[in-house]
Image (cartoon, rainbow, N blue to C red; front, side, top):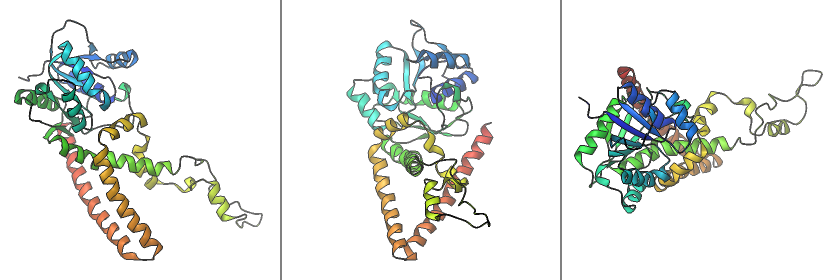
Length: 316
């Protein structure tokens, strides 16, 4: 029998509501809390659970699905109120939050730092899906003060949501999350920012004169398109897809994983600087080397994502 019978979810955004919906589908009783009455009401209407009521006693697990900057404070308050026996969170950075919780006097023996590796480019409870975590990795980050029972309970919660549990040290998790999630977001945003003033309905090409010849100055026509969006196709769309994610949420995430992300940006900047210098010098060597490594890395990414899709199909 599952050790999870009753769960409190604090935070009715995309991830919190998806966790609640997944647990409800698994037969778990879920109660919801959020400082935003509208988000709470919408999550409840979706069948994610009922509003938390005072005096219900401790839940088996309290899931804190709030922004990283508030996790430690919410954990401290929830423990002071005795809302649960075990606590976890879903933030995508762990080391700083764990340190903040320790400094804040939280009971770390029953706090399991967690991060389900799933999401969407849209936010809010209306974007939630009960199947969001099926076949996906759910990282749990044990620390020296954590009790084995608490870890086992949260692992059971993640499994009930359809996820595959992976144990990682907090600092190892943060470096991995920086590489596979946080850095891609920054790069996507930086590229999309180049088109922040572009006209999506800009000219498709230079005007034709009466004889069918292109008239006017070609450079002027191109600059009028503010970046050439009239030529945009799938490559630009694919690379900038996650740039549409909520900026406020990502500022908070990046602040909580700043050093690993900055280190990777430094490494990438060195590669880009080498390519730029090589292009100006008509030196094909560095360009070919980066492109070749890119091919190798892409093949590894495709294989890894193929395994994830196979796991998702097996779980569905």
